[in-house]
Length: 219
Image (cartoon, rainbow, N blue to C red; front, side, top):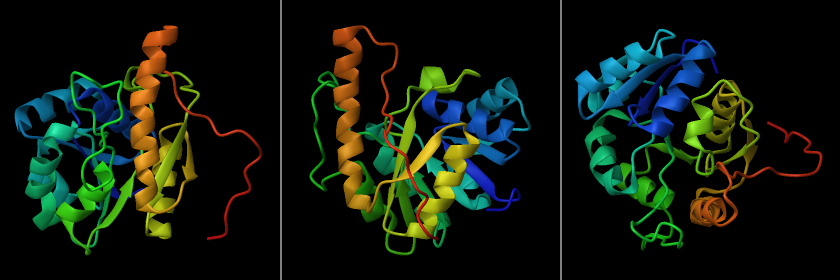
């Protein structure tokens, strides 16, 4: 992936989105923050620094080669519907976890089986949908620390998964191929379990690490 690749982080004014945008920009990537409120996106970009810029959702998606969607589950449909005309042929990374307040410590999957499957349905077959970043504590990711967490990356397009794993690496984390998009249900469900573990054991942002020596798969 070229450093000239433009990345849009939609929902980039939120905790996870701003953390991902900052880490990618700090690594030298060209990153645009997209938001329903472009003035908020511009303000967040200025605060974070590292050459970040901000605009509305549609403009960010249109300008980018890779789009990372970091909005809450309740805003997923509206966000994806808004950008759908601008993302054909592109990689869209969906980070959505189907948390349904107030019972966020209980697994509650949507009828489609996962938020990622839902995203693919909204965007259509021309979009290379990948899902990732489900189990990373945003309040750690925004800091210049070793988060100590792996990122499971799902998608039916292996090459697209590989590009996203490269972005995960730019964020200072280890990305791991975790199979087809349908497998995303496991990581999405795990988020509710991690929230429960955080509360029960008073953990400051539990995450997932894969043990053993991993041999990189062939391209």
